[in-house]
Length: 360
Image (cartoon, rainbow, N blue to C red; front, side):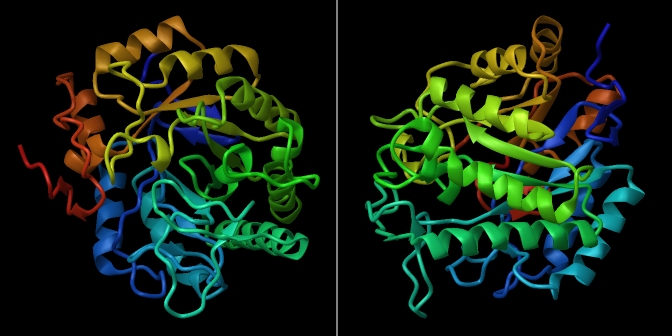
């Protein structure tokens, strides 16, 4: 019988259990996106805490766009050596580490230094109130190559894989969303065209890193907004990526336009517990690619039931590990109490292993 503490193989990576730290915006890199001691300590706490794999905070692939304050970067070769320290540390604790790569698009503050803000179309972001410039064909190629070069740097730095962020309203996610993608060329219109940017970016990465390097995807099951990506659209994208050879798909949902309050990363779905279980289970039943379930994972017994009743293979966490970085070790010791995280909506900055907004 399957267990949450099974040792498994994910795209050639040996994972000591089925628990994965999902990405967030850690907020502790320096002004150029480089590692700091505070950030390194956060990751060491996570690695020591027992997860099978860590997906890093969202890491920007081009310095042509304005990052978030404290966001990690991977936009040139200067990051390779310093990230080796991070990957070597993680491996000492037998935790795999995967770099999440992203272009923010219109989900950032307007630049005061002349940096670009890309979008599939010049449509104002409903959550951030920013309006990007519509990308030209040259812009599209530039961004695709930026992702590919970032992935190659990650490989050179010793990361066990990369995760392409195609969720939560960032640039690649926007290409999938009809409300934001109003292009009339081969990148807009029907879902086949709207998927093209993601498919080509994935292929550019694969061409750089080779056939055996793990490349994962994070995607919305649904945008939960009018004229948003639908679940049918999501399944289409997942099938296409599976055909191309993506190694795992993390299923999330919602964007800033669909969220009930500014700053929260919960979607408008009323489902309790693991928010996206139903969607992820259906996807997992249709494709021959491991599916990772994220969102609302708090209860050990409930996760065991999902593992037994569906073909979902892995479970990822963010807020619970902000609140309790050694949660997995606690569960492995036999203390199977629910995560101490109470799912508040303000876990964007970290203070060691504690959520600084809720320390109950």
